[in-house]
Image 1: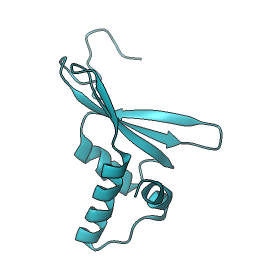
Image 2: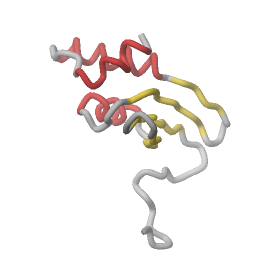
Image 3: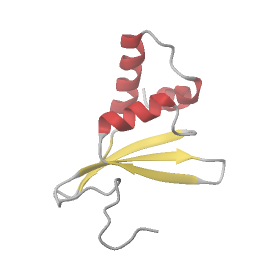
Image 4: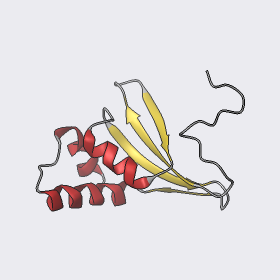
Length: 101
């Protein structure tokens, strides 16, 4: 439990923030949403296997009040990074990449 006055490392400080939410499927019946404030770190965590079965990635801005499904952009970036680093696309991301390419 967080104490009053202690900032969570996930919740950004300030009113104008763009946040990234990864919808991750735990099993057939359960999906969770994991919020991040850094797109580059989010993509790195996807490639590193920090998610079970990512379904989509959504960005939204707290001040401008917009939301966008950026799953296709993230899938393209993951594919580009794998090509750049000469690594094979991880199996756990194959469904995500196929459904958003």
